[in-house]
Amino acid sequence: QVQLVESGGGLVQAGGSLRLSCAASGSIFSINAMGWYRQAPGKQRELVAGITNGGSTNYADSVKGRFTISRDNAKNTVYLGMNSLKPEDTAVYYCAAGRSRWGVNQPNYWGQGTQVTVSP
Image (cartoon, rainbow, N blue to C red; front, top):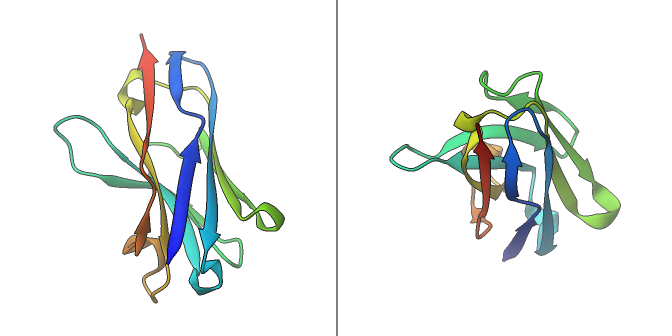
């Protein structure tokens, strides 16, 4: 099993920045990719950004150029840096990890979620 614990959410004004952290523990050797999803009220959960063990990254079109995913292997932690935040970025953000060939596109593990609220 893998445990994921997020931190760093909060309330910020439009144009501001936040950084989310996700610390992984447990059988982390089984993970081949990690990422961040978000879910806004009344909407489906969507993949925001992913990063493989090899360091390859991918982003949703809506966040390209504004969000950056990174990892610190020594700390077993993945980060999501969010700049130029918009009200439409408001959502619960979930850390996710995958161990199958589909990686973070079909996560096997989820964090508990952290709220990000962007005010106009």
